[in-house]
Image 1 (spheres, one colour):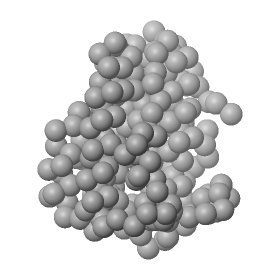
Image 2 (tube, one colour):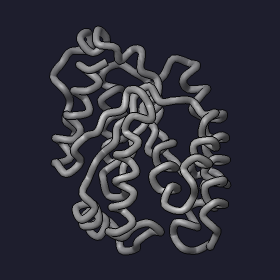
Image 3 (cartoon, helix red, strand yellow):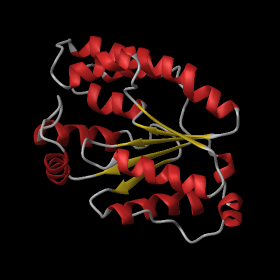
Image 4 (cartoon, helix red, strand yellow):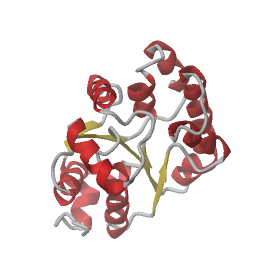
Length: 213
């Protein structure tokens, strides 16, 4: 069920959504990123904004290699995996994100740079990861969907039969802390309580875009 903020399009524009072109959603697996990204895209379109919903890793060639690693079909060392993420991101920005923004439309991204720092930071030095990602466009708004790892894992078990590379409580706890430690990495970052219902999370994000910018 989609929940839309009751503020009118006039009020939305007044508070700055017209200035927001690039929104990134971040969080541990099971925090509801894909669900909330879709709801946010629909809400922005209702507000009259043409919106591209996209995600990382992409469905391109490099993204396919990354997905094979996450699924356990391919074994690569952590540094090589993060280099692939960086290459996938560079191609994604050039081919999809930047052209969309240049046309005046909005991009909603399901995972971006903070995911590389949070997950990659488990095995690769943060300084190196930050250097790799420094050239990339900064989001106008970043939402960190903060879910407790046990709740996130319970959601994942209900949603699918298999688990991916980082999906255990110990790793997700570390990843969650990495996200929170980087909540000030980009300006315009908001931590959202993702232990709530789908509708409540969506409304919290809409309120931020409506009143905080």
